[in-house]
Length: 314
Image (cartoon, rainbow, N blue to C red; front, side, top):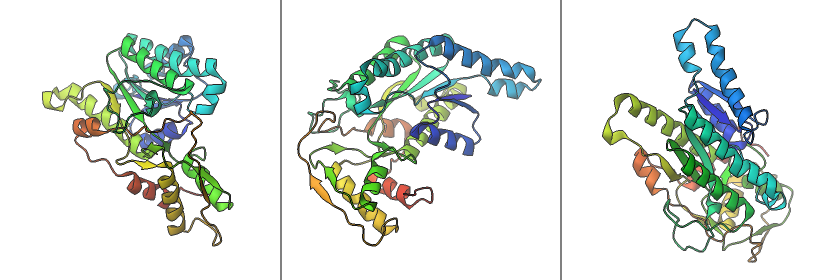
């Protein structure tokens, strides 16, 4: 059984939706389980697993054993982290530290979501998993230290770094831009900031694929199918500037008739950087593509699928 932590967030809710649609056993939690408190984590595991003893079904008992934790929790707001350092440290460092220790003790595998902000943005080519970390912000530093805690604390883990994640939650860049355009407001955008827009749907699918392939290998133990634990980048294919992304959002909103007839794109190029966003955080996804033997969709294709969906409303 899979335990999804941070289930009410953008990625967590998408992952739960896909697990349910694929009839994969899972449990979900959000703020009711405090991952900065190890006792709270242990209590949740014991309560969920002990409930299986109330049934005589061997399958139900097996399915209630937590074998994976997917940690989608943590401070994701960069500005919040800068203003609330202690809270960011608790959620992004202490939380992963507690999870990896308890996961190791209970023989549970861990998937932890990290960020492109662990890099300083001075590169001119996509960062790989081996690139030197040098975070500039409180958010980036705490995410980097959270990774370090997992690497020190256990061996059966996947750390997935991603970039500019969006999903069916209005607190992301796609909805922010859509709302501004709809209301004829001006958008400040920096053409020099380069990122990889990434769909939460695509990342959730990758998480499920990692779990399923790892579990299958544990049964068959075919050496050629082994996916090494460790750090992986995952983004949709391709990179773009924040301005290019904004222009693409506008064209798709028009194409799929999400905007009133009079809505226009009003952009002001803002070449200054408030130092909260590294200038270049494009991630190479070559490693995960090779290990999972799959073709990752382009950011343009995934963005169009997202805006075209009936679930997208502004």
